[in-house]
Length: 213
Image 1 (cartoon, rainbow, N blue to C red):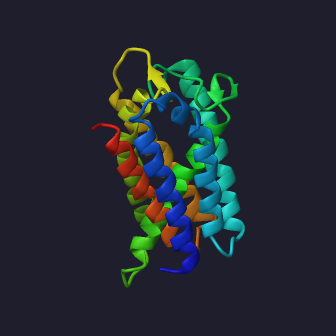
Image 2: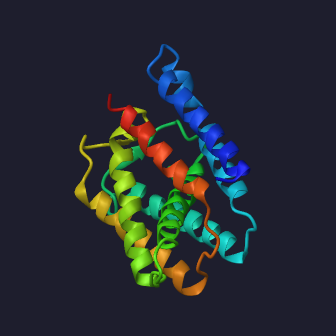
């Protein structure tokens, strides 16, 4: 593992371990309020890990972030895509009832997913097709969301107004993720993938699982 990757992974692990412990302490509310900083930091670390960055990386960042934000705006204000839910104050400034940082969260989640699948593909002799990459990425991202959702509700990131997470929330997550990755793979496939996003994905999965304990 390259030295830069070790440093980035070390920083990510340190923040998530500190966060996991802090959320179990008397300082829980403070650690929840630090969520936007952690999200921005993890995104910056991910961007740093990709070197060199090409046009496809920036196009994916813009497309996934903007698409995710628009989908969330429709979802929150109509209840037709994910179900009836509202965002809490944790992520800060909102436009149309959706925090601006949700676009950042969508990019980070999408990128961690597609990067992980491409890293796995590196161990196979034959490259995955655009369809296969999209199917696998969407499935991995949805699995991540299944783990994230109950913890996010517990941490006050957002709230389901009927008290239950509807199944079509996950169906929409899978569908939108599939479309984003497929468009990317057809028109501007990501060619550069690194170990750090793969490690960060599983650090975050472990972090959210700890919230169940």
